[in-house]
Structure formats: structure tokens, C-alpha cells
Length: 230
Image 1 (spheres, helix red, strand yellow):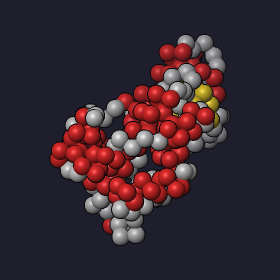
Image 2 (cartoon, helix red, strand yellow):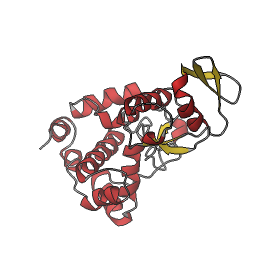
Image 3 (cartoon, one colour):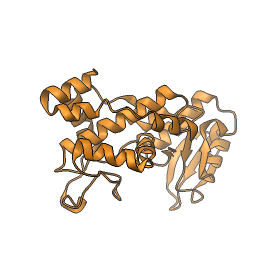
Image 4 (cartoon, one colour):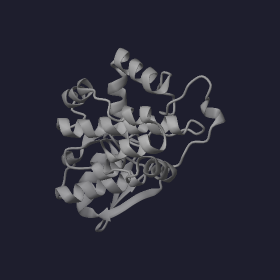
């Protein structure tokens, strides 16, 4: 039994603790086949976090628990695609079907989002740790999952431009505001980002090393300019 299961069973509900050990190898297989994850171990990690997320939502029905990771959210979608199995899981452990609401958070007819406050990420992290007696794992921090093989989205393309002044390259948004200034060696990479809606980090052109490509993408993600692809 994991620490999270023990914590929930001891302090809240044996049934919810049991929910955390639910096994769905078909979901893990789908995540691997759809290339959401690189191997089954990573798939099992994502699925385990979905179980914790759903339990946390059940424990906090007076607020909206937002979905803060695109990759964990993709695992949730994969589970929902198995309609019968997902419905049975929800009814067994929560007594209701937990659906995907417009703001990517569970809801039911008696709990409208408009009547509930949404948790901040810091509040989510605190409630996660209190419920499961363990820190929020790295998988919830999308920017930290950035590696050369990770795919990201740029929803602002092609409304960005890139300028160069002497040894400085600048990424500029549609209003003319400079978003990022970097060494001119990053010019080709920034130009690529400005005009590309989806790409793998490794595809960034120019003379950047893999570490520099990862650092650049992480910086833009931290500012909300890029988002990790599921």
C-alpha cells in the first residue's frame, strides 16, 4: 500500500483509499500507443496522478480543483474514452459520474462552477500534500518536463515577430511589446517559434545546444507563451 493510500484510508475513507489502487492497464497501453508517454512506467505514473486528482476533487467539492498539467489531463482523457470502465469507476468510488467541465475540472449538476471558487496552483499543491502526505510530484509541473523530445504549442503564432539589434535578438508580440531579449545566436530559434504553432524542442534551428533549447522553451512556458503538448 502506498503512502497516499494509507493517508487517505486512515484520515478520510477506506473506499477513497481503495480508489487510488485502481488498475487500468488498458489506459496505460493507450498512453504508450498514442505517444503521450515514452514507456509504461511513465504511463502508470500519469494514471496514478489522475486517480489522486479525482479523489482530491471528491474531497474538495466546495471548490473547483483546476487541471494544472496538460500531460496529466491527457491521461484523464484516455481513461474517459473507456466509457464503461470509467463510468463504473466513478459510480463505485464517488457515487456519481465525474465529467470533464469547460474549465477542465470535475463537476456535477448540483455543483455549478459559477458558484465555486477555483483553487490556485499553490492551494492545489497544499491540499494535495495534506491529503496524500507527500509532495506534489514533478509531473504536475509541465515546464519541468521539457526535454528535446517534448512537443509544445504556441497559440500566439503567427502574431509574433523577431527583430535583431547588434548582438541582441528580440521576440515581439502582436502589440509591439518585447517579450524576450536574448543573444543573437537565438535569432533563428526565436524566428522559428514566432511562426510555428506546434513543434518539438529539438527542432529549434540555429546554433543552440539541446540544453539551451530546453532553457529557452522553459522560459517562454513560465511566462505562459508556450504550453506543453499532451
